[in-house]
Each structure stands twice: as C-alpha cells, then as structure tokens.
Image (tube, rainbow, N blue to C red; front, side, top):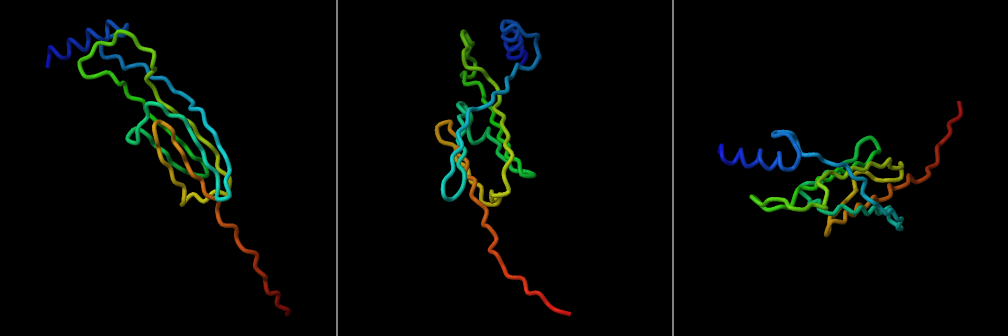
Amino acid sequence: MTNELSKRQEAEVEAGREPGQPLERYVFTPPIDIFETEDGLVLRADLPGVSVETLDLQVEDNKLTLFGRVKPEAPEGARLLHQEYAVGDYFRSFILSDDVDHERITAKLTNGVLEVFLPKAAKPEPRRIQVKSE
C-alpha cells in the first residue's frame, strides 16, 4: 500500500500538483440542437466520453438539467505522457415551457450523443360551463 501511495504522490508531483491535491476538473457546455416534431421537442446534446452511468438527467420545477462526468481513460498503472482530452463535467440546463409533459420525457445515449424527447402535453379540451339563474 505504501509503495502504491508513493507512486501516486510521485505522479502528482510530476503533473505539477501537490500530493493529495484533487485533480483539476473543467465544466463544459455541450453543444445542442433542438427541433420540433408533431409530437414534441427533441433535444440532442454532444457528450463525448460520458456513459449512462456518469450521466444525470432530471426535471424539477420546469427546469431540465443535464450533468455528465467524463472519467479519465488511461489504463490502471499507465503513465500519462501527453494529454489533449480534458477531464471534466458537462453541465447544461433549460427552462421548459408548460407545453411539455414532464411525466413522459424519455432519453437515450448513443455513441456520446444524448437525445431527449420532450413530448407535448395534452391540451385541455374546451368545455361548456352551464350558467345557472337565480
């Protein structure tokens, strides 16, 4: 265990950090497309490096929030020689209109592209109100 810890500390110093200091993480704003269909809206977000396990998508108070975490891909015990892929998190939130049915929202993640279907809420049918006389 001590040997493992010293290797980790050595790697941290080599990377320019004090031993035990947390890795620097970036927050990215993913690019998105939103389009409308007859049934509702479709939101597509580019989330390279995010898996279903590291993705959190939630709706609260008419706000859709997506949070995705990118984990480093280096194999266990490998020494990083060059890095261009940034390690970080994706974060984006949207205010939903009242026309979206929150209970029927669905999502899928395919090859790093998140697709969220935001179905239209059923519009209430007009109804006739009976007026009584006194």
